[in-house]
Image 1 (tube, rainbow, N blue to C red):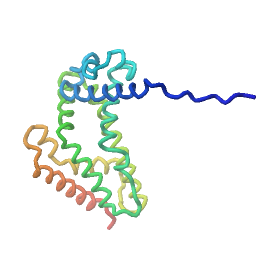
Image 2 (tube, helix red, strand yellow):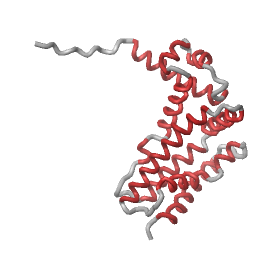
Image 3 (tube, one colour):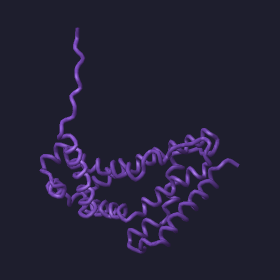
Length: 216
C-alpha cells in the first residue's frame, strides 16, 4: 500500500520570513519616494529594513523585481480589483462614481505625487526604468480593469461605447483634471477645501462621461 505523503508544517521561521519581506517592501517604498529609482541601492534597502543584502536578494532577486513588487503591492492595496466590480442591478452613475472617487483621491495623494516626482527625476537623468515599471503595474492594470467594467456596462445596455479602450482613457483624464498637476507643482495644500474639490471634480467628470456615453 502506498503511504499518503504527509504535508510538512511550516517551520517557525516562516512568519519571520514574511515579516522580513514586508519590512523590505516598506523600506524600498520609502527610499524610492525620497531618492528615486537610480538613487536607491539594494544596500540601502537592506539597511533600512534591518536585514542583510543577501536576504533582500533571496526574496526579490534583483532591484527591478523588488520595485515591481513594491508598485504592485501599493497599487493593489489602494485600488483593489473590487473597486472595478460590475453589478448589473446598480446605477451605472454610482458605479462610475465609486471608481472616480477612488482614483481621484489616489492621484492627488501626497505620497502618489511624491512617487511621480521621483519618476520625473529618474527620466530627467536618462533612467526611465522605474517609470516603465510603474506604468506596467499601475496604469496598465487599472486601465484593463476599467475597460472590463465599461464593457460589462455596454453589454448590459447601460452605456453605448464604440471604442471601449479609448473611453477608459477619457474617463481617467476627466476625473483627474488639473488637480494632480497643481499638487505636483506645490500650488495647493492638503486641506478640507482641496479634498472637497477632488470629490467635486470626480462627480463632474462622471457627469460629463455619461453625457457622452449614456444611451439616449
